[in-house]
Image (cartoon, rainbow, N blue to C red):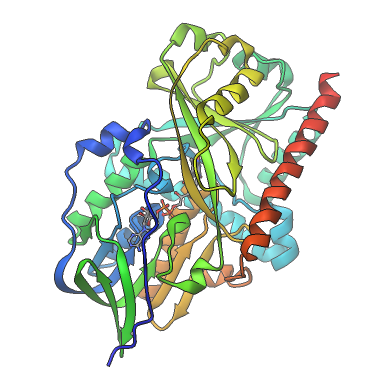
Length: 442
Ligand SMILES: Cc1cc2nc3c(=O)[nH]c(=O)nc-3n(C[C@H](O)[C@H](O)[C@H](O)COP(=O)(O)OP(=O)(O)OC[C@H]3O[C@@H](n4cnc5c(N)ncnc54)[C@H](O)[C@@H]3O)c2cc1C
């Protein structure tokens, strides 16, 4: 007889993803049916974000029969409402990872993160996802004098990873970003930005083309093991599968209490300006994605052919949306580019990311046939690509590369104290960013 492992009360909706820049596309695709009745499959993936969809696609490519259960709509979570920056790296700093796992594994992990960004690019090409609107290039700027530091980083990337990025002097940066805030930058021609929701939808179509099944409005509410089979309950249906993958990101409820206790949901924000190409061109003259080197920095990019800016920044452990959200983000934009003071905000939204205390992804096995693929933080576009890939490789018996993430593990999130500590650390980072910057503005 089956022992119920857990039941789940799905979290209430936050901002609807249809109220984002990517929303019109979301509304354009007919909703897939909810699960009804009993199905049997090789693998059941819970969560229709980029982690779950990539895992399902990679399994389908290996000939496995897969099904995806999404509680709301595909890409409804962070994956369908993020900034769209795709670049190598993790939320954790390289030096911190190296201290924990040693030089060799840190190097391998960084290579994996490069592989993740490459996997997204390869999928875009292979699936011909024109509506993902891929634009190449990422300008990682510094808001203080950092020529030597950036040149050393450029050299290190080339030496260690054969990964070439280009140094930009202060004058070169200010040619394309007319702001007194910026100093030098590294330009990464391999990084790119895209419409993440349309990318997610393309993965979903490919899963279905390969015979996989996808159910929306089907929150998994229970998970039990009956011998060699995992049984997932969702609405009036049930999926029986040899392998179950939990990929619920920052929206993970109590389906797995162990997972729920091992990450913190962290909110972050994005706004979209009204169109005004001429005004925007007074401040921003590059189609590349733009980030700054502050530990709590802003990131932005032009969309609609330079008509509008999509601007992201700020994080908080408070998961409700602040009422002054649009004003907060607008202030950040104007403090960088005063020319844009009269550029109005069209819409602003938030989303939840999952962060483990170690800031690395959580990819691994909870028990026989039960896998997790989550906690990609604010660096999820490349890392969900490797997370999904590694879990699929493990299930198919192709590799045990997922074990590279074992040293980080499912550490306790610290409860309320953990949440307060993260918020305090973020404020401290903001303060030290400001102090550092002010020294150069004086
Ligand atoms: C505003 C914002 C901007 C960001 N910008 C960037 C960026 O520019 N570049 C970058 O690399 N990263 C960025 N990130 C981070 C990145 O979006 C995430 O790390 C990544 O999308 C996480 O993907 P995921 O599949 O793990 O989770 P999600 O995309 O959140 O997907 C989880 C899904 O699981 C579903 N779910 C939850 N519980 C259940 C259940 N019981 N049953 C069924 N389904 C369930 C949810 O409905 C959701 O659709 C940003 C994040 C946010 C919020």
